[in-house]
Image (cartoon, rainbow, N blue to C red; front, side, top):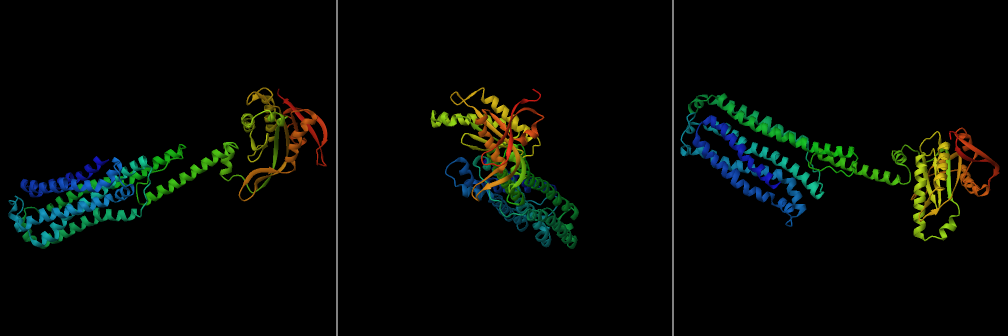
Length: 505
């Protein structure tokens, strides 16, 4: 990057020499061209290189790792276009003072060119037209170009600093509208003003004008305009890049986010409204990253689809009445089994067991709401709509029974699972205190499911379900009615069923 910076600063010498070459068509004096070119070389190459070295030094110390101050480097990076512009403007003033003014006050310093006589230039034309034009071309315009030339370098430098050091620059207080005003001032207003000034004075000194040059006012004016035209092309290219670079950088970051990379942070490489837009984009992505983390974390308890729906506020968390099928599981003789195991072995066995159950329940559109000791509490049709929730709950129960009866868990421990299923109206929503909330379901039918699970001990069964669940799923499975039963603590008598294989089997 340092090499590119030096090349950017020294490239102004090339631009100035191009201007000199265009003016050569006017004076056609190789002596003047070489003489003024030597002054430009001394100023824009030798002296410019020396000052550019000191301007870049705080930045270079950081990149070379020799103890540079990052805060100082950041300030210098942000101010470098202004420093470069001010320095080139100073060089332009030195050039006007050292080279152009002596041509008028000491006309014998160079032999007269073929096209004009230096000593015959009317004073009012020299001071009110020629000097302002040359001052604009060799001082103001190069300083204007230098700003955007170094700004183009700074945009890439900030991108590099962001990638290597993960540093975001302040957005600053620059305004695009103010910058466009100065662009209009330098590319439109001032050149037009100089044209009108030149024509006004040339007409006023028409006779003297003919005495000092063979060219008409329009011909000399066209040479000046061609110089400005060349400089304008260079400036327009650099100004365009000042807008397209940060926009392309932001579009690249947007593309990464669209592909799912929520760790993306766009580099803040401008200090204007585009920088503000980039800052807002980064804050938005940070919010998306937190949301994705919540979704991934929540997804450990519910499916990713459910987590996404909840986080998009498409579920009423304040409480709603829903039809729900509740599935409750428990491990038979768990206390005796746990007494024979170490705590580590118990946790290993339960984690493996719960992993199997959670996978099965989620595959059948159920939500595991909580783990209570060795028990699993799951719900169907909450929070996502599932018109066949009773059928899916029974299918999940049958698969759990099949898998748990044919394999072991942890260190080869067989586990028998008892399951109770019931369907009814529940209240679903956030339950808890202001500090800790839990999305769950409550209601009498929830308690019935738990009682049915315990009732498996009485009937020596694995799966029991209530009459409401049977009614919704009776066309999908074979059932065996176990009779009426009055649950403990309940006045209402319910019919109890146990399912077998699905009807198509």
